[in-house]
Image (cartoon, helix red, strand yellow):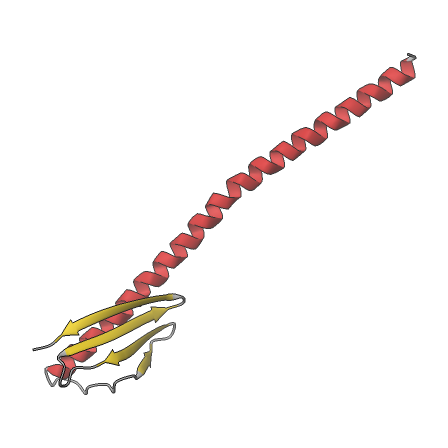
Length: 117
């Protein structure tokens, strides 16, 4: 082999090694980013779930105040918009002493059942 052929072979080998190392680094970075993305989606869902619960709890307080004649009873099936969260009065106490209130925020929905006496 001549001097020029050996140098060309070295350059080719170095180029192959660089491509392999860059591919491995790309896989490592992609593998490190995925868990972070999944964790951020889970954290967002937790926040939405908490907001939905507090909205449902707020609806329960509205019903409790109405039962104690401190406020007007909302109508069954009505919805109250809280600017990002909603309260839906699914069932209200009447002949059946059970109230069902749903709170929602984003994709999360929480339901509270309240028995009045």
